[in-house]
Image (spheres, rainbow, N blue to C red):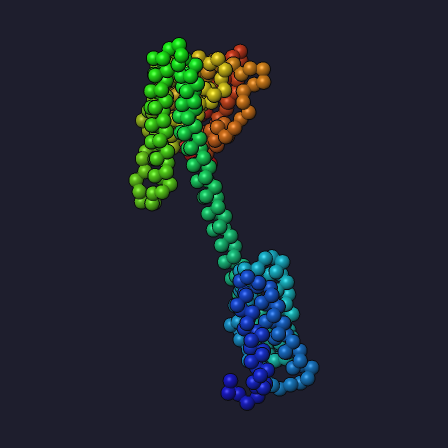
Length: 342
């Protein structure tokens, strides 16, 4: 500022505002900021070369490096390429206006390339982080959707069936209608309990202790006493002591959802058989029903089969669902005991 060979003060002020002002928009409009600042420097240097003017303007290498960084940090690919072209066009012009040694020229190019590389690296890292966060959110949404479908839909389906049965027999067998109402009350209570548990997990902090997930032992609770059609029978065989908790929970949810599907879609079904077998390295779940599909086949696959297939696949297992020769429908899942995730 105290040098005697500077340009007039009004020109200095105008050039400084033209160069430093665009820094305010370096994130929202990085290409415009680079074009305005480096364009101003290029015009000034060209005028100095053509006129041979000795008046110097104030310069800011820090501002230039910040703009180069912001171009690759916040700009798109096309904007970064265009802005880099502007910078590379200005560098030889300023070297002509202010001749420097070859080492200084190489160092100047190195400074700008380093700033650009730093901006690109941080941009790439930020994109990776955003992608990981989005994937984590998607996995959480899928898990929540499966849990809601497997728990709430199971109990609500039973409530709907009992309500239909109660209406049908209310006039002729009032005592059986009362029994249906009792079953509905019990199913509704369990539904509210599981809903509260899910909501509690969603609202709890990270250091909260969550309730344990149901496992193979709870599969036996899915059996019915014959009052509800179809009747559900459960048979467990093999060893389940060292079973992974994730696999145990998956077996329970798969059985629960299969029973729900049988109640909804298996016409004239009288029995559903659930068999869980624990081998040395895997667990096999088989659910059979004796219902008929009708001429048009069963209902189209909805979120239930999709969720069951995803649940088995995530644990490194296999899943199959389809009709049995003659009559009925079979769901079969095979999971590794350790629950190896894919």
